[in-house]
Amino acid sequence: MSTEVIMPQLGESVVEGIVGRWLIAEGEAIEEYQPLLEVETDKVNTEIPAPASGILLKILVPEGTTVAAGTVLAFIGQPGESISKGGDATPDTRANGVAKAKPSGDERQRPRPSGQSVFTPVVSKIAAEHGIDLASVDIRGSGRGGRVTKKDILAHIEGIKIDGSAVEELPPWEQPGTGELFKPSEEVSPADVISASPVPEAPKSETPRSGTSARSSDRVVPLTSMRQAIAEHMVRSVRTSPHVTTVMEADMSRIIAYRNTHKADFEQREGLKLTFTPFFVQAVVEGLKAVPEANSSFSDEGIILHRRINVGLAVALESGLIVPVVKDADQLSLSGLQRAVSDLAERARARQLKPDEVQGSTFTITNHGVSGSLLAMPIISQPNAGILGVGVIQKRPVVVTTEGTDSIAIKSMCYLSFTFDHRIMDGALADRFLAVVVKALERWG
Image (cartoon, rainbow, N blue to C red; front, side, top):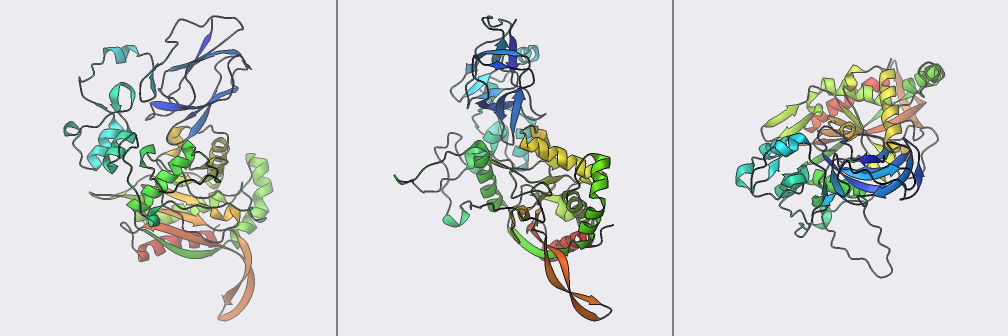
């Protein structure tokens, strides 16, 4: 009997996904647990393994189709075997490209309001935060059964039609910028820290048109879902928060000396390389404890101070950037942080992260220094209050004062840039946070 390939539910709040790419063609052999297809959500791309060994008999859902969790995507069996009749073999694809799964018993018994949209708790929360009465507005739901998705409500808030026919034009100074990655320095390798600006969450309908047309001699590279998500969130973040950046430098000599002394023992004991990332996370935790406003979010009702400290770490991928989150970072030791960081980074690059693992950050760290950059002004990952940019660690001469006498010494220095939401913090408070981070790094251990 053939085996169904089912669209999984990739997180508690994720009820649908996009079939991004089939990694195996119809008629090809596949082993159990071998990657079969890529599934995209608005936060992460995930490889789905084959549930059985055999031949990919039939693909039911084409690439680029949005389907609900539980939808039968394909069948795996033996050569010449007939497809199982135990489920809906052909997805019912509506005009908006969403394929419906066969309803469960609970769904069949649950009445749907006639002529009205169905709202999820996430949608209701967003609507409440923006003072929207869902009972009095007409929002066309693009989810299964007319369900209004997060994308739909955010598009309504922005005054943009879901089909993209009425996208607001932005002035040139609000257009998303571009960046280029360079060869990493010899002193800090890509595996040591984290990289570039983060990929936050955003609805696809928010991408502004640039007003630029390609010439006949130009080559147009289509936007991937990840690149589009980056563009959307970066534009939305700049339009949401007044960004201010303050810069300090830290002497990393003590941490480098400790790491050089203990990295061999650490790797033998833990089975992991000791990188710089957990040191920066620990320093940020100290700063967030000292200045709770840096671990907050802005709302119309007031500043929301988060009790949990969840640190997002930007990781570079071939197709863009993603920000896995170390939950409750303040509860982890140095080795615990290293395990969490290594695990998240490895699974991020293997596209094995779950959507829940890139949600819920209360602060973000991004290491632009991994590509040799000295200084940068990163964009805040909404709805965080700030983001710490880590520059390259390099040796340079600095003035050292000992018992009133100045001298020049060679130190391993690093610029730290803290971009913060000026609605939440002023310069003095932001400087206090960054000063605590610097002190924690320079006096570590």
